[in-house]
Amino acid sequence: MNLANKITIARIFLVPVVLFFLLVNVNLGSFTLSNFTITYTQVIAVLIFIIAASTDGVDGYIARKNNLVTNLGKLLDPLADKLLVASVLIALVEMDKLSALIAIVIISREFAVTGLRQIALLEGKVVAASTWGKWKTAIQITMIIAILLNNFPFVFIDFPFDVICSWVAAAITLYSGIDYFIKNKSLIPVE
Image 1 (spheres, rainbow, N blue to C red):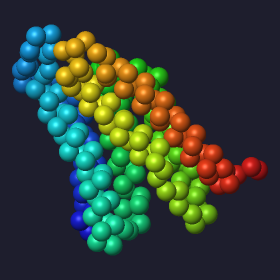
Image 2 (image 1 turned 45 degrees about the vertical axis):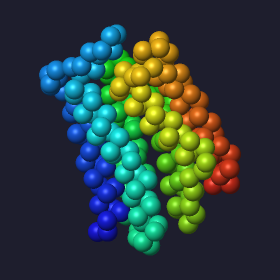
Image 3 (image 1 turned 90 degrees about the vertical axis):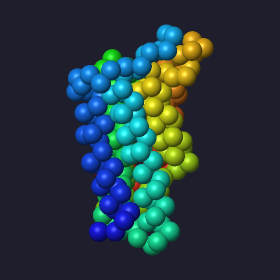
C-alpha cells in the first residue's frame, strides 16, 4: 500500500476519534472568555477534524506527484471525505448545533453525486471534481470548524458567521450537485 492510500486510511480512522470527542461526555474542563465558552474536548475534536480534513489535499497531491494514483485510492479518497463530513454533520445535528435540513441537503447531495460517479465508472468514464465541488468542500469544512469553535472569533462582534456559513454551504452544495448532473446528464439512464 502506498503512502497516499495510507494517509487516506488514516483519515478514515480519525472519524471515530473526532466523534468520540464530540459525542462522549468526557469532562476535561472548559475555557471562558467574556461571552465565549468552549470545552477542551471541542478544541481536541476541531483540531483532529482539521488534521483529517487537511489530509484530503495531501493524499491527492502525493498520489499525483509521485504517480501513485490507484483504484484503491480512487475508491477510498471520496469515501473518506464523505465519512468525515457526514459523520460530523450528523453529530452536530445531535448536539443541536446544526439544522437537520442543512445536514440532509449536504449528505443527500453527496449520495447523489457518488451514485452518478458510480454510473460513470460502470461506463468506463470518470466524473472529475468541478470548481464548484472544490468550493463546496472548502465552505463545508469552514462551516464545520466555525460551528465546532462556537462561532469563534465572530462571537465577540455578535456576527452569526457559523449560521450564515451553514446556509451558504447548503446553497453551494445544492448548486454544485445540480451542476454535476447537468454537466453529466448523458450518463443518466433514461430507460
